[in-house]
Amino acid sequence: MAKRGSPTGMTRGEKLLGGGLLAVYLFVLPLTADPMFDGIGKLFGTSLSEGMRNAAYHYILFALTLLVFGGFMVRTTRVFLDHPWKVLGTAGIGMVAFYGCNEIVWRVLQMVSLPRANLNDQAILAQISAAPRSTILILVFLSPVVEEALFRGYVFGNLREWSRPAAYAASSMLFALLHVWGFAVGNRDFAYLLLAVQYLVPGLVMAWCFERSGSLWGSILLHCGVNVLAVWQVI
Image (tube, rainbow, N blue to C red; front, top):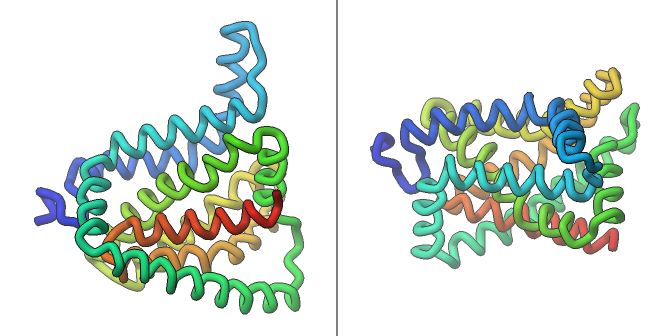
């Protein structure tokens, strides 16, 4: 069944190409994107603005995600269309769980007092200020599709075939590290990695939403909803 592609599983080709895309997204692009755009700018004798770089970066990732996971996205969309109320209801429950659990974690972290400010949040605020329309599109649609396809569809979905606890742990930890490790390396401050704990709850809740709904659109809609509310609070 996995060879042909089940509604919640991936084909061998999707697994192989998906692993490469995940590695590039996690470990290559965070360190090479700026030098790459600098080189493109020099080649054409111009300087790409931060907004243009951010938009190009995410549009390319979105296109690669559809290219690699196109068949999986079609199958998971069919599940959504067959059971729309289940998927929407699960996303709604996930939203309540997300904010409830996040509130608990936030109160605990206030007592612990993490050692660094969240540079990821600061970077997003700067991007919204510089290019509000394109950044909102990225946050509300492009990033949720890319990240859910990689971390929930690929990592969680494939590991779940072997171990459900490992699937939750690995997908959540990789998702958390994505948001902090580039800043830790760039600033040569590995204490910043402790901020990954802030992203563990979102990763766990979104993985649950994918598993419970049976469609990646459950976690995509939850991710979109969370980002919409976050953007609404700052604009």
